[in-house]
Structures are given as structure tokens and as C-alpha cells.
Length: 435
Image (tube, rainbow, N blue to C red; front, top):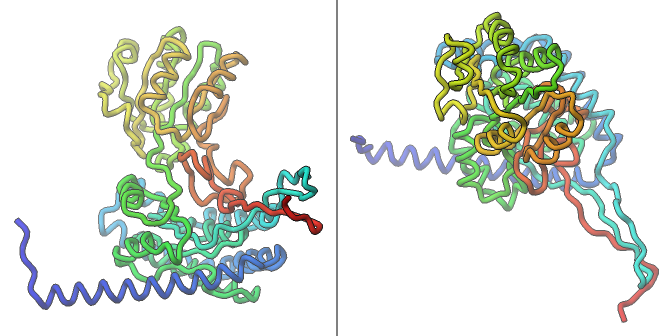
């Protein structure tokens, strides 16, 4: 039974809501103004800002680590699970990766202003498409403070202003990284409002951010399924998203055993809390007797719990029973569902039914089957003879990624610079008039 609140509490809540709305509108207005400046910003200035951001982050390394330590302590006290704590933690290696991401983005070609498909028409005009920024991008994310720098770098290089709303569990880390970003922007002569980290942890800020089409052109949510479902349901701004990362590896009968073992173990155990981690392993029935015991031993070394179908459990009787829910599960934990299938067709039927169209891989030495898998599996990344963990903007050469999209419109897969731009038609003439 809900407890009615007093009139004073109601008035206090209303006042807080108005305060958040006012703050978010001011953030949106500043971002819109900055976007108009960034639209005409040259590549050299954007690159100078990125390098300045890297220098500021490197100099503030200890400050950022201290802020992250406060977030980690608070997270442990609040009972954050292991997967979330893994996403939250920063160390020198992860800061170095952020710095490398900034350098890679700096080195990437600037897509803004590129003109594609220029054609001469019978009238004498020339028609093409020019790549331009989206404008203002709102990013809503949980746990991972490195997203703050990745998102800022990609938005800036693609000529977009951005509003970053991280999770409350990473508030100190995000604020410290945000300070480095804004210092770098100032060093390069750009407005601090080009990249804004939302200063309030009030959840009402998310509702405001996704409801400001006059200030925000696209929303990119990164986080748990409940967050993304909420944003997709309530947003008045277009959304680029993926809901689940139910990724599969299918080991075909022709697969090289050593390669298959290495890929299957890496895809699951490299990191548990990422959306490109394998959650279901599919094996061809003709190799199951040979490979399953060796795979089970390898997973046991990593303390991975296996849940298998009846045919899997006939070979590995100690394995737990996989239920219907397991085939749908994105565990983000050391748990793996295992199924024995009758060839590639059965594997692809399973992937189509239970997959999330994120990332799926095949291990095979049969060229024809590899081509079939690539053509017929409807996922944003389809991988042959490599781990699903490569489905990542950094690994794809994008420098960093702002997220992964399983949508089919505008952007699909890891979203890098081109995914943060759109195209407009441009026409060149020499006095032509239409007859």
C-alpha cells in the first residue's frame, strides 16, 4: 500500500522537478549554441582539442583515479554486483586505453564535409551528398566512466555538441573526466558547452534530456535493458540503441579444434560484463563428444558455470539443465548456455529465434558455410573464425565507439564517426534554370 505524501513533500518534489527541468533546458540551450559553432569548426581545431583533452587527462591521472576510488567504495557499500563494479573501475591500463582512443580518433579522417556520389545530370547540374554533423547528441550511460571520454571524443571529431548523463554510481569519476575534457576544449579555443557532463544525479534529468527535441537531435543510451527500454519508450527524440547482447559462437564440424577452443574460451571469459561476450555456445553434433569435455575443463579453469541441453548433458552429466530462459539470457556473468545442434541450419534457426541481432560467430574451415553464415545471420556483426569480443569500435578501427546499434536505420553495429553524421544533398550549378 502506498503512503500518501504531505502537501509540503509534494511541493518540495514539484520544486525539485522544476529546478531539474530549468537546469536541463539551460544545458540544452548551451549545447545547441555550441553545435552551431562546431558545425563550422575545421579539422585542425577539433584535433587540437582532442590532444589537449588527452594531455589534461594524463596530467590529472591521480585525481581521476582518486575520484574513481570514491565511486568504487560507494558502489561496494551499495551492493553493486561484480559485473557493474568491473565496468566502473578505472586503473592506469584503462586510462591508457582512453588516451590511446583519443589519439586514434585524432588520427582518423574527418568525415564532415565529405561529398559522395557526385554526378552530372542532363540539365548540367551536379548532385551529390555531403556528410554533416547530427547536431546535439545526448548520451545516457551506466557504470563505465571511460564512456565519458569516448563519447566526447567521437562527438567532437564528428562536429557534434554532446550532453553526457552518466550513472550516479560513477558521478565522481565522470565529473573528474569531464573537467579534463572542458579544460582541453578551452585550451583549443572551443566553448566548454561543446561537451557537458550533467551535474545532477536526479533521475528526472534523464526524462528531461529525452524530451527536448528543440535542443537534442538524437539520444544514445548505453546500459542495462531497463534503461534502454525506458528511453526507447519515452523519448521524443530519435534513439540509437541495442537492448541485449545475446551473442553466439557456433563451432562447425570442419572447425580447427585448437582455433575453436581458443575462440570459444576467449569469447566467454575475456570479460563477462560486456555486450559482445558470448552467452550461448552451439556445437555441431558430430564433434560434440570430442570437444565438449575439453571445453568443459577449460571453462572450469575459469569457474564458468555451464547449463546444457539434453544432448550436452548426455556427454557432460554434471552440467546444469538449460531452461528456455537460458537461451534468451544475457548473463553478463561466468555462466554459459551450451547446445548441441545438427549442423549450420539448426544453429542459424537457434540464433534467429533466441539471438538479439548483436554479434554472432562461426568457427569453420568450410568457405561455403562461412559465406552462408555471413549472408543469412541477421546481426549487426557477423564474425568468421574470431572471438565475438572483437565487435567493438576500438577493434574495428573506429578509435572508440559511442555504442553499438542493432537497429537497421541510420547506424548499425559499433557507432563511430560516420554513425554520428548524416548526409544532405548538395547541388552545383552554373546558372541553370529548370525548363
